[in-house]
Length: 84
Image (cartoon, rainbow, N blue to C red; front, top):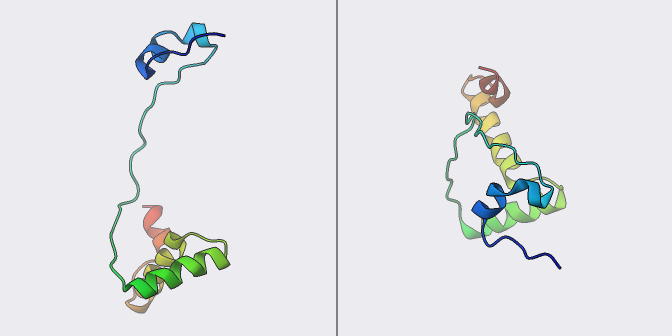
């Protein structure tokens, strides 16, 4: 049995020994910013259950809510913000 490299650095330094192709990582420009929202625990629990029930992510529901708020106040939709 072949011994595994001791570290990630060792693996990167010897890609020919592993048969792996090393692709340099270039981080993409962030198009999104993380925001935090505080809600009552019961609301958070319900939101998590809704996400499971509808096979969606909590973030999908939060973005939908932000979109509704933007529409209420006459702003562009989130999708329009993404393209600019």
